[in-house]
Length: 305
Image 1 (cartoon, rainbow, N blue to C red):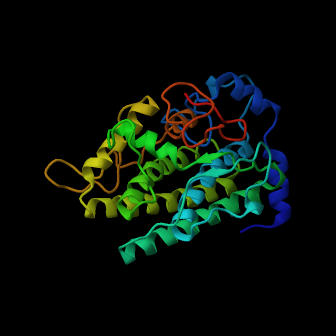
Image 2: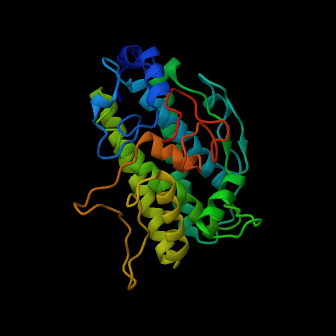
């Protein structure tokens, strides 16, 4: 896409720095900071005087999320996760708990998931390449007990029961729904924060792909008549991120489809970095670990709202 020398120069100028760390230790999770953001993403006055969030910090936050999605989908289609060489970097490298190959009964769904898995792998490779020596390692990821906790919170199962996302294609689609809408709202919020236009174009491209993925998952769930469970998951996400109305199910009363969730202007929703971490940590409070990331994410953007 662009020369290695150009990339190296951009990384050297926008890698994570002490200003990032001081800023996020003080105010991580505040709307307007991180790879994701709500409508107030551009609120620079909330930042310390002269301090700015580097593009490197933003892209590393995105890389954590891509690690999660890539592992989740990779296991479903191949029975294995990312190669070790794609998990190294700064911070503590962790393992993956859970995951296995899914026995998809519907050929077209198997094809869709295979394509999505390939895209998520490419996202990991792309971000790692562009970040170079500034890239963070894959943190510890839980794609087993975390889904049980999420399903319990959503009311899909009772306390003491287990939700296995890899048991069948319906379970897997519901589990994928947990991630996909969050990914769209995450990259949507990156635009006002990314200073380098080349990175901004790349982030916009990833956002477009994540939106295609989300629409595919939402469409299949709608066709399977799973609007009820999806609404329960959507409500649970809304309760975690602290801001009602950033999430929508896949259908309306009367049977109408809602494949593309948008605000009154037809624009996709955004979440702040803290709100995204609220969802993936499965905790509405301000914490630095939990849920799908039992030891937290790597990088300076690591605290939920």
